[in-house]
Length: 386
Image (cartoon, rainbow, N blue to C red):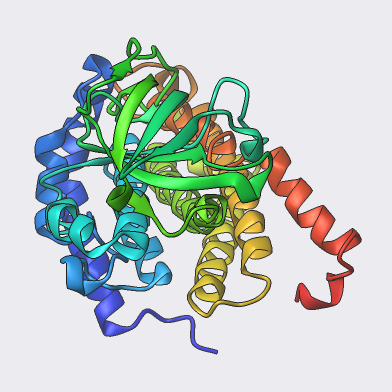
């Protein structure tokens, strides 16, 4: 059992950290304050391969593992949490198209998506179908060589600014088995976008609702077979949970480092904050839990790469634990900065705002507990969780 990074993993980590320092961190506060969607920076990430990290090489992706991706996304998140989170969503949607799309679809879209020249959004959540994703109502009715797509989605990252939408819609009966997946050009006739949501965090990526009114989608744009959409969505979410968890870890790491610097520089009662044992204990707990979160995320990614039968459970565990820890570490770092942590001259308040949503999306942390609890109690799988 070797926890060291391979030479290739270390090289990708170094490249991602350098990109984050040079292109993301210096502009992150501006993007947040002005709600700028930095397509130029995302395109530059694409030039390094970071827009198709685990997409196959035959469509221009790097073909790397989920563990490799977790290492890269952690490094990028240290520069800008919100922008990196969008890049992870784009990677997931691109991978779905590259994996389940037909030859024509992949030829048209694969190369430009993996290069970051065109961007993708993922559209699953609806006003009445959040945690209950299998209850979605958006419909796709077959009409000759096209589907007629009707319904609506909410909380779609990048919507209104991206080029293609991966949409889950109902083609059959109620329940998970009646859902299919489609790749829909974002400018197709019949698509309208709502106003850009005003959010607590994640301000460098737009979030909008989407309405579909008799949108004509070619049969060739269906991903997989009819009825496979929910399976595709869940496979995507296993990886998506690792992605968002590692974004929390990466953000918490830079928050911890900021707290360390501040505590050695800031003096009160004639000595640096670092000299107070009570504050040393807080830093110790932050660092310990952050290391535990990182290792849990990487173990879950390793299991997903190997198609472990318990991969879904471990991905849920990693997402629940790492996003809770990530937010807690950022919040503690803000507290250690006192009033300075609360003002925008320092990045701590942005870290807190950006990591808070990680406990909600890709399945709320309450749903993660449901997945874990049911697997152990209803399936009797406790002996496999070790």
